[in-house]
Length: 92
Image (cartoon, rainbow, N blue to C red; front, side, top):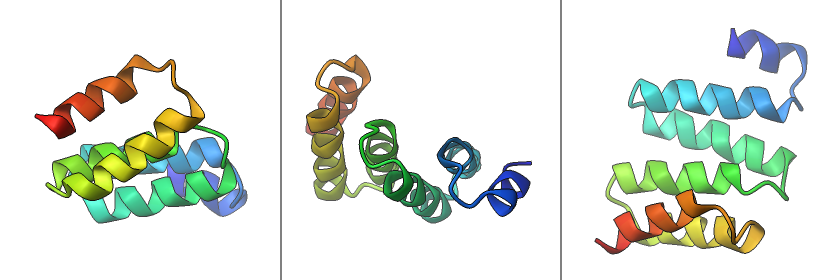
């Protein structure tokens, strides 16, 4: 379903986020990050795509890259508690 939405409208950022979530649920981290990067490019002021990339990087044990993306997310939306939770996971 998400593939069809991104095929119809390549700039539909919410579909790219959903596409990334689908890959993340299936533990396909590289494809999830790729979909989130596309959403990040299409919607540069949204904090959710870099936060999701950071979460995927944590799952692959890439702490430095995860921290980088989580800090980008925090700079876009410093009031989202989920970002601080993920930063805490990275610090742990």
